[in-house]
Image (cartoon, rainbow, N blue to C red; front, side, top):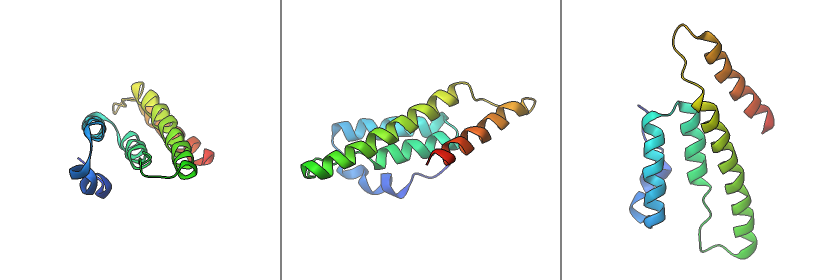
Length: 106
């Protein structure tokens, strides 16, 4: 099992109720999702806009959050059909194609 990212370890003590729910959701993802879903879930958590930002900064941070949210949903949807067994090499190929397509888009 992967270790929690440093971001989550350092902010967990300062979270609000909604932040705690986000941490619980991330730990649920970490428990049962493959690495690529965990990566985009952690990126989604890092992109949550903070309340203390100015209007323009908040708008930019919110755009980043929406993009990270879309990437997470795409990865999670892909994962719903991705559970490769050793006798299913096409599913592993499908995961590699997902990564390649995502990397080309960024």
